[in-house]
Amino acid sequence: MNKLFITLFCLLLNSICFSQNFNGGIIGGLSTSQVSGDGLSGFNKIGPRLGLYVNRQIKWYGLQLELQYLTKGSKKNNDVNNFTFDYNFHLDYVGVPICFLANIGKNLKLELGTSFNFLIRQKEEIEFYIDNSRKVQNFETSIIIGLTYKINNKLSLNTRLSNSIIPIRPHASGETYQLNRGQYNTALCFNIHYILKN
Image (tube, rainbow, N blue to C red):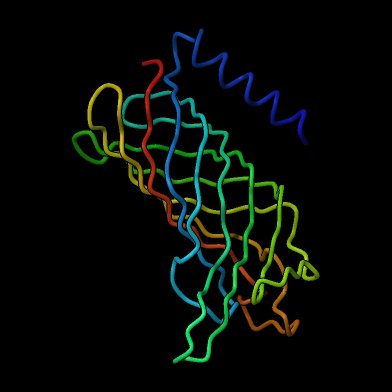
């Protein structure tokens, strides 16, 4: 897996530096996330999202390939009044998003796509006790929808929502019901794109 991402990194960097047909740059931002089926609600888990991207504009649409690191999971702080406990579910992923881009307004693009993410670290804390007995799938596929607004020739703002297509793990009870097959990641990311080459 490490060789795959090193190869992809080199290909992305090569495209940014030498290609005449591709634009590319750096991604930096925050990922806020939650996990369905854990009894909690809200995008309370906050972590970094970092990466590289290359894209090619073809008339009113384009294609974009990325290499990213991001944090997902869920979090709940102790609340004595509501009898809740400290909980921190931390997942680190390295992934390859592939997006279709469409111009929908002046300096505004819609993005639709999918991401192939590989789990590199799992940590689940309950009242500061680490319990990793319920393993998460090593591979996650998610669907993506987002918006990118171009500020100037070097900077763009991006907001992206993603959700797992297949469960990251079964419910604690093991039960399923219709389309609810287990626990799913949902992430809302806020990013800045810095263009290295255009």
